[in-house]
Length: 73
Image 1 (tube, rainbow, N blue to C red):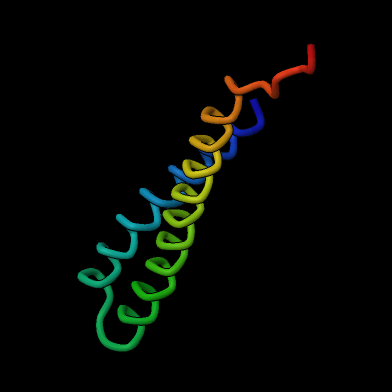
Image 2: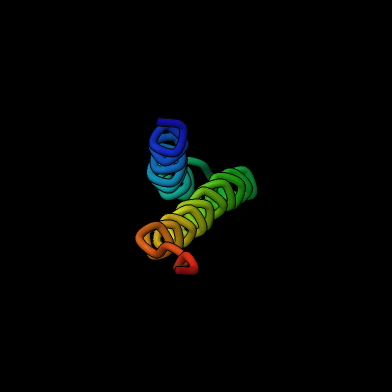
């Protein structure tokens, strides 16, 4: 449940901040628009990398979950 909740939060941060970063570049003028777009874009990229990391650990967990060490006879 905890991983599902954190995944939902990361997806929200990734998508929402990406859209706001793109909108800020067009809605605000000058340095303020560039700064807002860069800041929101960095947050979006950070959430995206977090999603990739969590996906990598889930794949590793699923691969090792089915394997059991053989017990000596």
